[in-house]
Image 1 (cartoon, rainbow, N blue to C red):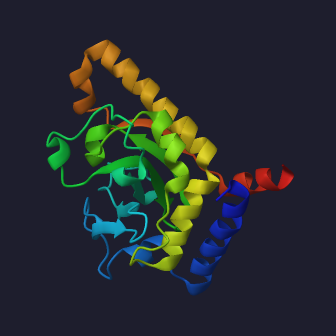
Image 2 (image 1 turned 120 degrees about the horizontal axis):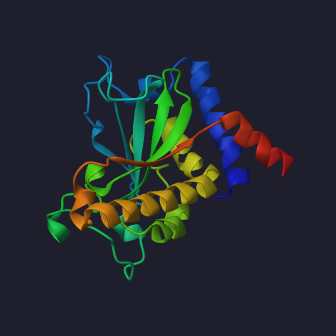
Length: 216
């Protein structure tokens, strides 16, 4: 899916959610609301065809951007990545790790359910198999969560957002790797597993993004 193809889907899904009066977070969270740090859904939303996945969670006040309600974490499954690709770092359990995933990015959502930023995290934050930026970038087109059991508008929105922002995500992942290089050069390789949770950030202006595609 190209950015041109993705843009109408993003608009359509956000419009449909607004029309129904149920923004993104209300489609993901249980009726009683979020418990801080929990995954929603509990065992992540997993696509039955591609094995791509996502989950949503909410940080406690004071531990998040005041404008943010919560954020999605988006993942490729390792089976979607070329087997010849070698991770830069892996979970402590190695091949016995419970989740064989590669993190694409986090997607911050404001209190109206509108996306406000992308961000890239350190490996330990999501306990991922950390692949080089160029490897993840080469596989972004394989991210597809249209077939998870969760709300279909949320699924379609997330698939389309990755396609719409492929260029920005590529830059974000390269910034992530550059920051990791700086950290390890300054403090040694073990520094990547201690602190330094947020490595790169990219603000989202959805209107400007859509307009830029129309002009092009």
